[in-house]
Length: 450
Image 1 (cartoon, rainbow, N blue to C red):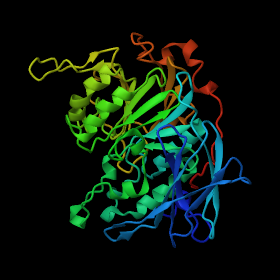
Image 2: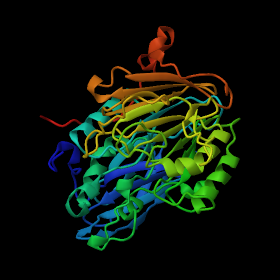
Image 3: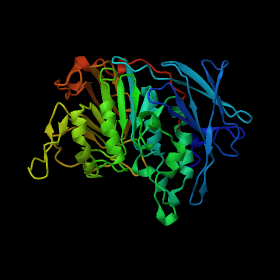
Image 4: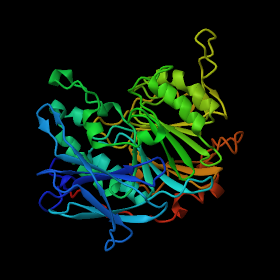
């Protein structure tokens, strides 16, 4: 989208807070980290918050940071963690005091529990194109309580000289959603921003300055891998672009984290990485193979329910398969159906600047259940400890029709159930799909004029 697109407009008022976004400030949502940028000066770093706009009776102070990247200098980036929040409560919050005050709201996640429902949006590789705008607009219309974002945010590195102004436009573009509900961040390859030819040799510099993660709450030593608990789901975020071999910090953390999972409290176990472990697209084919070879057995042994990824700019859902029999010498290198294994979903179809990955391998391999090179988003609607309704909405349908939909059953409580049949084959199940889901109050949609 051009720089003068209305979704990139700066908010009115002197030194107005912009690019406002929130993420969990702890592992379960009793804290929320609010981030924003001011362009003229740092200004006031206080956030007031409370249960009503006329009763903002709690306060927290932000830290402020800036960074330079080649010929770019950032605005003043504020990060403020709001604490002592109650589960499942709507809060108002405001910042910008002394200049231009802006007010937003969010609802904290419910207390973790085995039958606590939750609606999780799933988006990846969104960028800031017209297709990106369609994806975000359709997600807003579909509704959700939080977003698990599979990486590749701004694609600033695809513009001349890694134009970091595109981090600012991307922040303003997404504010309409991420200021009102937490997004859980996975770091993608376009977040690395490693450019020694520009003198930039510190990986992830813009991303780490702008998008904090609650990694310390899950005892992770780095912000790129961590876990959160949302309602009845324990979500583990992995880093495809950090060392993950045996006995590396990420590998050791994952081993310990899987041991801490309590499926009686959070029965749904979800993992996310940027690079997919199973894909039948020629784009980025097998780039996730080394991570799969290192970590897949851990995921199968732990009975992980779902593994989400991005990176490949298309959509694909697998059956429950594993390839853990293969030991280099036995020749058993073909994935097999395995009810102990996760379902793998690649959803790198948010709208990016690089276009669709339209080179599907032919014929479709047996491990692939559904695939399509279209832009879109998905929603995972966890109902209780045993069932979750999943649907992928392609942009071409205007988010009114689920192009791919299935009921997932939990690997801990229903380990032997085969949940691989799409709901389209079962009208009685399909009738309870997204059309009957409750409505969600979302911020006003912002659209680009023709």
